[in-house]
Amino acid sequence: MDRAEKRELVTGLNDAFSNAGSVVVAHYAGITVAQMNDLRSKMRAAGGTVKVAKNRLAKIALQGTDSASIIDLFKGQTLVAYSEDPIAAPKVASDFAKGNDKLIILGGAMGSTSLNADGVKALATLPSLDELRARLVGMIATPATRIAQIVNAPAASVARVIGAYARKDEAA
Image (cartoon, rainbow, N blue to C red; front, side):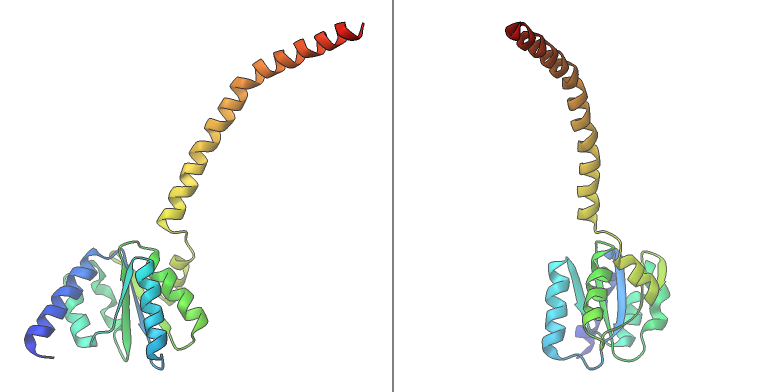
């Protein structure tokens, strides 16, 4: 890799770290190419990216970003997973780590907040942005349905009473 390629990689990583909602750093020693491709495809489907970069270049790319506090995590064979959605990268990385003991989550960052491995796993248990939106819409729609039922209830009650009197008169 020549200087121009390194400069381009550092610039691309710096932009990615600046725009990322969350960043996850993990050791990947012993993961096969097929497993790495599987992780990359799962991350891509969730809206994230997995990169393997030299630690020195990743540290340079982190300088000047909100995630600069995680520079110390870059030791050994590390990969970086990041996404704009703060939940996507930690969720996919944690799920993959559960099924593959070769992926060891070291920590990460969410904005300017540095996270340890337990923090990343806790972040992964939160619902995604789409799930939260669905819950919010459900909570908003439920009261509207109840209001419609309450408004219609008196008319239905009156109709049932009139129907009961009509049946009573027919029987008599």
